[in-house]
Image (cartoon, rainbow over all chains, first blue to last red; front, top):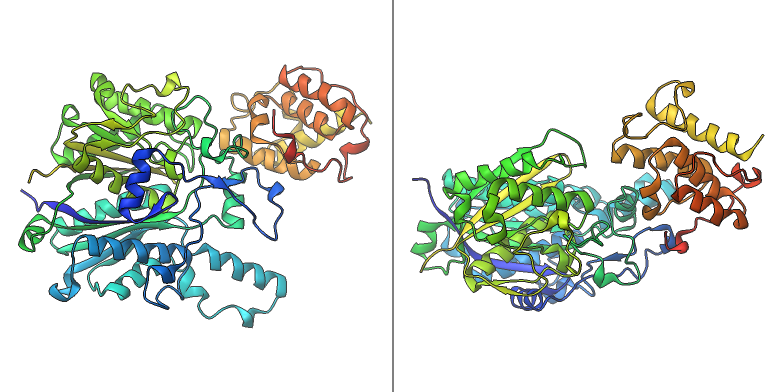
Length: 418
Length: 123
């Protein structure tokens, strides 16, 4: 029997709350974090087809971090620092009591330090003064800046990795952390997913890709509507989620409170298309089956799915098709929800937020609402989807995460009986 | 030169360049996906080129009706035509008319015609 891996701490920076208690309360109440983008100054907002996002308004790193700690990293890494700090405190994880080389950091990030990145690139091309590129530009935009700063801030000297698989990044971070602990290369891993790229260039790129919702610019809270007939693309979000993973033995030794077990994980490629999923859902189904097998559970044992559900026309339908392929008649007995209906698509943070939501669902028995499910699309129909909060004593949760580049991930969490 | 020939020629040329094939082999009746083999991402890339050629911004909602070369031609004609002709051309695009509306060619060329109609709230 391989080493069991458990979650002992959680931290969140999200458009519906900074801090797990605030986030979870807002999630259960079904509050939307989507709002109008006030400006992309100096660029005309009319040039953007989509003008809404799941933004974190008035975030100041100094409010949460020691003075100066967040100064030399980009916004996404500041989110990562804040979320990791909360998760470590939540886990009562004290680095001075640990062998620091046995504590790793694995971060999932899709875009990375784009706030400074875009600014510096723009200035260089406009002003043509290469000697004025900021000395901190490279350290900031290097995609492992968040995993680096988290390790420095909290003294974790074990494996330090960044996984970038677009929208599935931090689901893989969870899975790879589980592998590292199973393999015995770490006792504990600080897992973080983070992104903050509601920036003029990245946002314009997603607009050009025709991936974003554009019908609800005047009603932002209605725009992220996974599985609803009126969905027309995803809503970009930003944020970070952090989870402390450790071996069960390590958690027991230090008498840690356990949220859930990370019991299984699968990573696959559809080897199909950069941005379009295979419409028959077979590859997504295979990914879910492999994760369940890794966890040693059958589809009949699964109670809850935190769906990838980005609110795109094709993506949501493919996911439901795949769920039906795997779960057959069980599909309509599952509780299912879409966290992106609350906060939008936080890209690299999405998998970690799904992990946090799933852990909280297993411990609380509460399933947060899926917002804007006003007119369920028959192509995405599942009996366990609801725009209302549901109570469900779930023992096994499945997290789906899919990324550009034909990338799929699935993670299985199990409730741990005390 | 009629507007139709002008718009159609430019669109077929853009398509030919994108697909790396002879413009003469592309017909207005060709279905973008089934006949020309464009997937949804390729349609978006192709329209991106066409937006540049005609100085347009095509709202997401208008993509639905653009399934053949002829639809794209009709749609673009409607967008580059002077205001009164637009509604007619737009409805023509909707019903996927095979004979594109004949409208004057004046605004069809380089002139930075019609500010991109992002505010027209999409169909």
